[in-house]
Image 1 (cartoon, rainbow, N blue to C red):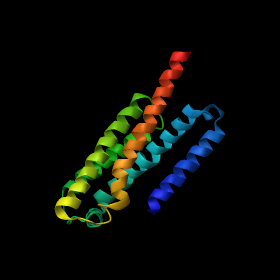
Image 2: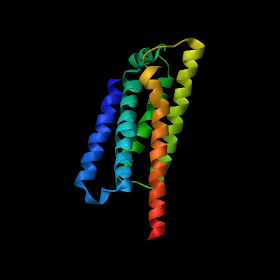
Image 3: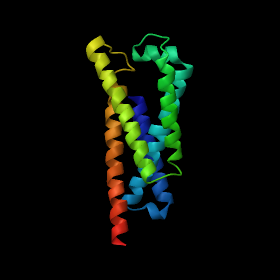
Image 4: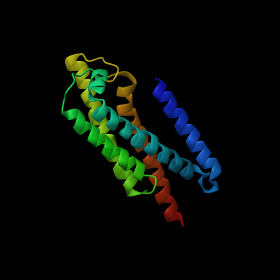
Length: 165
């Protein structure tokens, strides 16, 4: 629960500071652009790097947290996938447009697929470990829906604005 509260506070705080300090962002399109930027930085880049370090350098602890046994070679592969998304999220600082779309779609598929895996673990193996249920599980489904929804509205506003010029 605490990470979700920190995430929401950070998103609100950083988006607000950004919009207040950059006059051109003081409209719906600008607010959504700023919100998306921090969603990519916090929830894709930082989360990706965090998961990379956990799965690669603290694999046994991460496995235990998720209710799995230690020593799985797949931990390393999942860690590298998280590193890839961390890098993509970081690149979203400089790259926009279709790069944001590709990053959001890829990360959303990864998260939702992982979420389905967590649900399977709950149903088939009765895995109710903290790293397999609760906030972790909800994040795998809610964040992609939120990210893709905000990005869709933002892209609509960008496209609509170009047409009206």
